[in-house]
Amino acid sequence: MSGPQRDEPPEAPDRPPRVPQRRRALLAAAAALALGGGVALAVVLVQGGEQPTPAPRPPAPAPNRRVSVPKRNPVQSPPWGFTGSGWQDVCYGPVATPGASRAPRVPDGRPCRPGSTRITGSTQIALTARAGADTDRIEALWSSIEPLAPSDAAARGVPRFNWAPVVSRYRTMIRDGIRPVVVAFGAPEWARAPGWNRHGGCEGCSFPPAPEHIGEWRTFLRSLIAHLPRMSALEVWNEPNFRIFFAPQADPGLYARLLEAADEAAGESGFHGPILTGGLSPASPARGKMPPSRFLSRVYEIAGKGSFDGIGAHPYPAGPPWTAGMTANLQQLRRVSERFNDGSKPLWITEVGIGGTKSGSGHFDVSLDRQGPVLARMYRAAQGMNVRSFLIYTLSDLGGSPSRFATYGVMTPALRPKPAYCYLAQHVGHMRACPVPRLAPAP
Image (cartoon, rainbow, N blue to C red; front, side, top):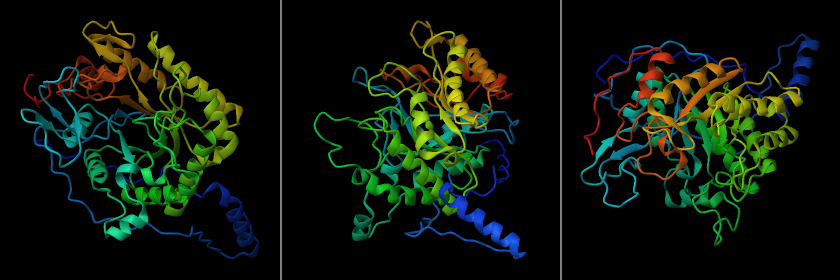
């Protein structure tokens, strides 16, 4: 990293120490007893079961030598930044197969194909900080971090958890002045309900744990908190109202149990930050999706408002007017919280965006010169809605993917700025981020 490193943000708790909802009545009674007797009484509640042991500290990420970041960015309200695919390295280069991605994401240690250029996750994070971002979203995929059942890991003599890739990205963010929102989801195969892989099932989907493995989910979250203690919030799952991420179908009852387990894990770990519901996919006629307002209502009914501190939202507008579409999606969730006498609970936008292309002719796209101004107007609209984060999907285009979201990046697949990147840096981040060093050769 050619520029000076930024000062690390102070570790200020976002709220008083957490006490799991189901134990608050016991603590209240203990406090009343202490006050009545004039005696200072300390009550320590410890959940039984295995306590996570932090893994050895992985090496600190190497400073990025090609993208400098400012020493300190202006504080934004709400904090803003980007979300993506786990901040994995990108291998950018030409492809021989029509339709194949020119910029596939690759795990640490996997080589790029010949003729391509590796753009590290550290470089991508530096680009967000350069634009003035003060928060990003990072994935903690349970199936990747704990692929083996605890008994199998013990029998093979291997560590139960592999936190190194996630912790490396997390430390890069902290180093660059970014406090991440961490989203935990995706049960490993051993923790899923029997029959999850039946023929004709949900191929490529994320699955929740079976009810009998919720204890292991809670242990995983305790370990997550131990390894990523300075995250700004813990988001419990991604789009749990959509079968693609909660296969085989959205189940608010099971999800409420996962949310309660997260509340318990936070209390057991002394985590002071907010627990968020998983960012809810907006209403649409997509098969296998439960409307977000209905899903959130059921979560309130089952888990209760005390089991979470913020409502995650993915208020993607379905078309113009873009800002009005986003705010309408947020207002649906706000009406639900008000119905449960919880109207002051903040919303956290953990994904939102629109596409930007030369022609702007796609149903979800605008022209390149309009993408940045539209996103900035959406950000300004969120400022008046008790929103605590504004995370744009995504930093870079997906490079050949047929997905609706392939053009939602504010940079090209080669991490060259689209006009939106420079506009957001200037008008939201209040930074002069452009020009950006060239990171990959022209295709």
